[in-house]
Image 1 (cartoon, helix red, strand yellow):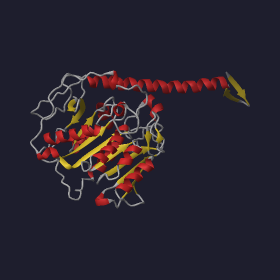
Image 2 (cartoon, helix red, strand yellow):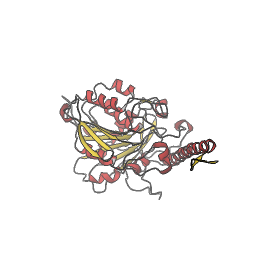
Image 3 (cartoon, helix red, strand yellow):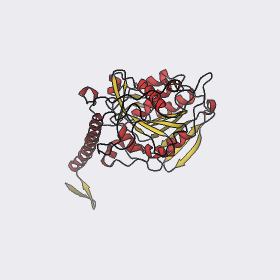
Image 4 (cartoon, helix red, strand yellow):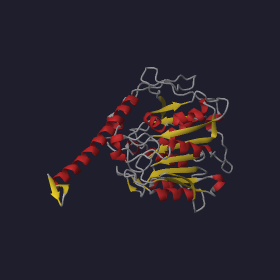
Length: 382
């Protein structure tokens, strides 16, 4: 009940507790809504099949069945059928080698949702091909102890290596300009790829996805790769300070992640400030081997979000605020566009796929049916 204290109206402890419970209930409701969106999108994606023919490049227009969604392409890797969304801009000059950008969703996400959230397909009109792979169980095996993909020991590195080779056989790709970017769990995958597919990537970028300790432990010689890390200081799902994520995963801090790459690429110890815009400041470590750069963009007060993306409404109570001072996708492409892969000593830049006859994409496969074994309950994106 209301109480009057020295002329002011105050809430009794009873009503204070009701208010606290109301805030908690709102957060739970936002979690349920997020899970509902992810489940519906994932189920819709599971019903799609390969729409490619063996003699033509993959289709990149809307789903011909009228859903308005881009078609899913499939690729068999070992005993698993993997899927991805591919966008090739209509104005692409196929006579000129084109960069390739792989964009990875976070845990509980999908490639289609990542395309919508990041807007990378619109940026691709600047002259590059972009692909949005799907993780198993809407997760990636990155060694941080969480997710269906890790519990099943899914070979995500093998999937991406195979996908790059297949796309290289179908398109005129610039092998010096292959890039990877991801959100959260997807950013962690980008880091793992930089470590384990040495010599394939010119640069990688991670938004809200630090290095897991296991990846860092095995990543002592990643070769020449430029790094961009973007992270919100108020991220409560994958904390800036590292340690345990909200879902129980294990990660290094943002500072430890950046210092790992600074050491691996033999960069200068003191960074230079390269951007200050609103609550975002970017700092770059220069003087690295053969022009490599390691950069960190600090989003003051930012949550577990993709800067520049549309705010999530009720979900903001779960993931935190989305900074609008910068657009992460534009920052990432600008960073990528300034870096091409330097040849390692004695190494060749030719792709394995280019050294042989073109390899057709996989023929159409039966629809992939979702199973309980390939889904994971959860209410927080990571």
